[in-house]
Image 1 (tube, rainbow, N blue to C red):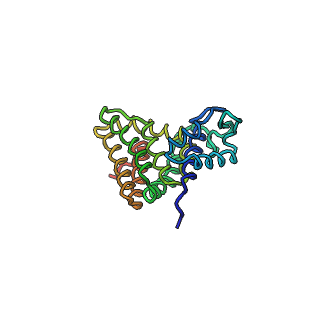
Image 2 (image 1 turned 45 degrees about the vertical axis):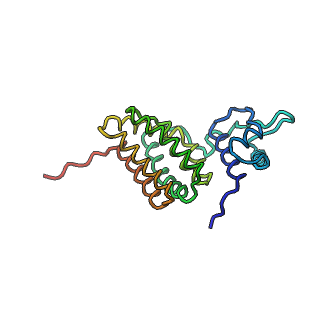
Length: 233
C-alpha cells in the first residue's frame, strides 16, 4: 500500500510544479514563508521543509534577509519534448496521453482531497460557463486535465502534463473548433469532463480510468476523422 504524502510533500510538489510550468520568472522572489503557509493552510515549519527540498533540487536559492528566489533557467520543458511540428506529432501526443491520463484519473479517484476536488471543480465551472456562451476555452480544458493529474498525488503525472502543455493545447484548440461546428459538440465535451469529475469525486477509480480513456479516444477520433472505404458493391 502506497503511504499518504505528508503536508511537506504536498507543498513541495505544488511549488515544484509551479516553478517548472513557468509560473515564476527567473530570479523572481517567492512569497514569504508566512504567505505560503496561509496559501497552503499549513504551518511555517512545513513550508520551511518544502523550501529546503526545493533548494536541494536547485530550483530556488536564498538571499540573506531577502527571501527565496526562483532559479528556472534550463527547467522549461523538463522532459525534453520538442516543438509540435505536424499532425503525426499530435497523434503521437494523444497516444502518450492515453497511456498516462487514464491512470492519473484512477489515482486521483483513490487519493482525492477536498482541496484537489475544488481545483477540478473550478476548471469544470469555467468550462460550463464557456459552454453556456457557446465557446470553448482550451485553457480551462487544460486546467481540468492538469488538476486531475495533480489530484493523483504523483508528480510524474503532473510534470509530464505540464511539459506537454503547448502540445495538448494545440489539440484542444482544434478539437474545440471542431466541436463548435457540431450541434451539441460543446455540450458533449462538458458532459464527458463532468463524468470524469463525478467518478473521481465518488472515489470510483475504475470508472474514472474508463471515462478518461473514452474521452481521449473520442477527442482523437473526432479530431482525426478517418475516411472509411466504401463498401463493395
